[in-house]
Image 1 (tube, rainbow, N blue to C red):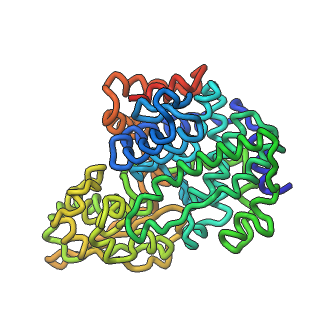
Image 2: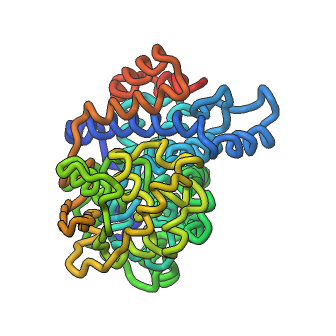
Length: 457
C-alpha cells in the first residue's frame, strides 16, 4: 500500500467511538483556541485585505453558507476556509506540532468547520474529520522532520494541503479510493515558501488558509471522480523527492490509530514564532526570580539549535530592529528583550509603536546567539538563556520545550482564559460565553453551523 493509501485507509475507517476521550477533549479545546484567535485577528491589521478580497469577488447578498469569523460576511466553504485559516494564523498565536514543525489547528479546523457548516454536519462527524487531519499533518511532517524549513518550504503549507484534503474527504464520506485521489490532487496544490523572513511581509499568514482552501478543492474534485496519483508522497516525482530530494520516512505512518499525535500539538501562550517560546519562559523566569532591571543587563546569550537560527536569528540586523510587527514576531532578540523589559509577552508586544520602544531595542542589541550542539530540535523547541549582569553575576535558565507542549502542558483553564481575552476583541461578553459553551460541547452539536454562526459579528 502507498503512503497515501495508508492515510486514506485510516481516515475512511476512523469512527468517533474509536477516538480516545482525551483526544476528543483536546480537539474541543483547540477549536475554542483557534476560534478565539481568528476573532482577535479579525480586528488586526491583516483583516481588511482579507475582507476586501472577498467583497471584490462576492456581490452583496450573494456570499455563501459559511461564516467568515468576526464579520457579517459569508462565503462558499473554500473561501471561508481560506479567510478563516489566514485569521487563525494571522497573529502567530496558534498551536504547533513540534516534531512535524506544523501549525496543525490553523489548517485543519478552518477546513472542517467551513465544510461542516456547508454540509450541516454534526459535531461528531466534524470532530472525527478533524482528528484524521491532525494525525495526517503530523505524520506528513514527521516523515522528514525539519527538512521542509531547511529547504525554505513552510511545512504547514505543504503538509497542511494534504491533511486538509484528507479531513475534508472524510467529512464528505469519501471511500478510501477517492481519499487517495484527493491526496493525489492536493499534492499538486501544495506550496508555501519562507521568503517572508527577508522583509517581514505577511504571506506566511495566509499559508494555512490556502492549505485549507486547497484541501477542500482537492476533496471536491475527488468526490466528482477526478483522479490523482496514488504515489503522490513517495513517488519518483512525489512531494518528498520534489520538495526535498529525499524519500519520506514511512515509520510515522505505521502508528496511525495507535499513537495519537493530536495530543502532542502544543498550545501557544505567546503570540510569536513557537521556536522562541522556551526562551521567553526562561527570560521571564530569570527576571522574576532575580528582580532583574533591564539597565542591569550587560549581555544576553541564547543557545539556539542550528535549524532554528535562519528563522528567528537571521538576518541579524533585521532581528535587532524589526521592520514590521510580523518581523518582530520572528525575532528572538526582540522577543527576549521585550520579555526582560516588561516581564510578559502579549499581543501588544508586537504593536507597531511597541516595536520601536527604545528600551527594548537597546536591550535587543545586547542579545546574541550561539549554536546549541546538543539540541534535540525538532523533537521539541528548547530554550537556553544566559544573562550576564553589570555586577558580574551570570544567571542561566533552560527549558526542554515551551509551555503548552507535551513536555510542559498547561491547564485547560489557561486555554479558556486565552480564548476569552482574544474573543472579546470582536464579540460582546454574552457572545463570548455562548461561543465558549458551543465549542467545548462540539461533540454534542447536531449542526456545526450553530457554532460557526456564533463567530459572526
